[in-house]
Length: 160
Length: 304
Image (cartoon, rainbow over all chains, first blue to last red; front, side):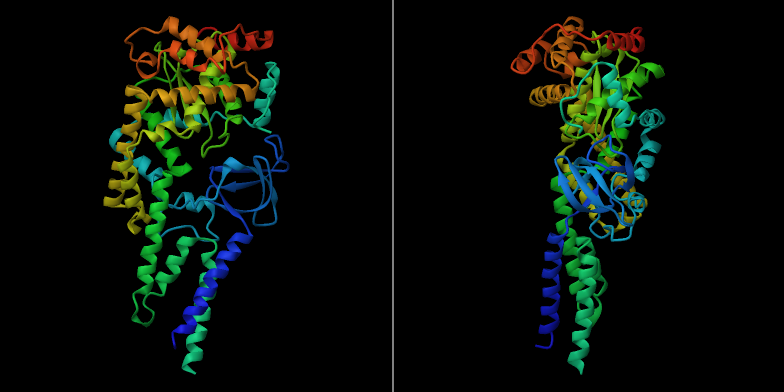
């Protein structure tokens, strides 16, 4: 009986925890540089950034876009594919807790990481320098849509 | 009095679980683990490993997360570029990236961990590869099969489809995935030193080997290739390109492929079979491209 009450309280708090989890949907950013825009479109102005692994609260959903709230009061739209409901930390004992930034989490060296890549490189080589250069070529959505327009291509759907 | 103290402690613990647990299920295990010594009971350690077990199983079934996919893709690309040389033509590469990155915006996966990037490889072979995460490689020989930007868009859309459908990751043997998560599930990988890093690198190496074997030597199944063609049609249509670009490009490829060659002749179904499969979605047709589009294609890839 002496241990009955603590167990009961623990049980109740766990159920409360589950209820709270249902009330506020929290998603995790699954891209390296998550862009938060002022309207639900790739053409929206970027008003904030969210790093890989960062948790964001869902405020509103519209088609492929989700309006999220970031810590610090910033809110804006992120494309659904940049978000996941999955826990992104792989190690059972080293999941990110609240307050750990996405950058710190990405650097934590879990699973296949920069550290594993460096180790692989030492034993197998590979032209990683060319891959690094390749990753530098990137165009923002507004430039890409202007490129399509210049070629007389009229998008019918998708990236809106 | 004693009961009050116990209740107080229990309340505190409950609050702690509540505070941390909602944010991160794994943290429940840590909190419980940290109180494992309380009263000499091993209950915390047990709970901790139980939580870890569940996490490991969940991840194994969902395979790799976007960051893992990114590192696999980089290594696949870096390995591929020991066999093929990048074409040093900034203008041509920029143009292929403009077309490819525009198409990717209209795929079902417009955003990946590291984004989509395209590179021309200096080889007369007719080939193209899509590494996990969005690194796409295309040979000069393949570009020569493209009569214009619309046909180029068709080739790139097919490769983006492979990225979106995660076809390269499917080539990794199931046992590697299980092995990876067994290692990752172990606490010691927190700082991945010594034996654990070596083990993880070994699984990583084998996974890259699996992908290279399928992507470069054996090819994906016909089913996956036809599916990638269908996805490509969707991407082309959404972007605003004429889907006829795909069968048109395949017709040209059929003319140029050398039977028995170590390129698309080996890894893909015959272009004529792919055209037949596409019949209900897109047929060979003359594509009218405006002068501005023809001009920019010629300027960028005219001498390829």
